[in-house]
Amino acid sequence: MQTPIPSHKATRTRPPGTYIVNEIFYSVQGEGRKAGTPMVFVRFADCNLRCSLTNAGFNCDTEFMSGRTLRAQEILHECEQLNSKKGWMLLTGGEPGLQLDEAFISEARGAGWKLAIETNGTVELPQGIDWVCVSPKSAEHTVKQRTANGVKYVRRHGMGLPETSIEAEHYLISPAFQADGTVDRHDLEWCMGLIKENPTTWCLAIQYHKLLHIR
Image 1 (cartoon, one colour):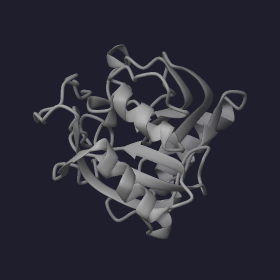
Image 2 (image 1 turned 30 degrees about the vertical axis):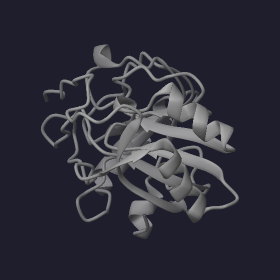
Image 3 (image 1 turned 180 degrees about the horizontal axis):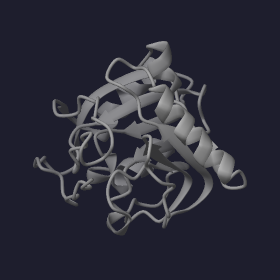
């Protein structure tokens, strides 16, 4: 199985001080160590990978190509409209690391938000993010973000336990989901077997939002 080769630049240009955002919505985190936590999701447009069953073990199911060009203050205003009490903002994509910069982090934290991010790890992130989850989708030597709070690998039946280069507090294995939002029983049992054989390090992670059909 070939792995996707990342580019480290966004494929679209944007005016200085702006960000291309696919969508902003308020929901509950559906996976990882913060599952169940209410968050405002900011989905940045664009990605430097094109994950498919043949090159990553699963087909990407996220629409991240469309988007609006917004300034940080406009993004923060929309987030506050959704949750005036603020709390957690989750930066996701696509690949948010292609656009995220220190200016956005400073404005968001200055406005009272705690920042979490979901990244494929191919771009080294700026400092100041409160919770980093790296989910590698390409060969380990392409990973640039080498520290995280959590690291999550997607696995199908027959795929081995990764030899991760990332230093993290939590190490997670997630079975790949089917296009209809279900998990193949063989994939699930295989992932459970991996963590049972390595119980001191790895835990099972399930994408509950897909099972429950919520955003």
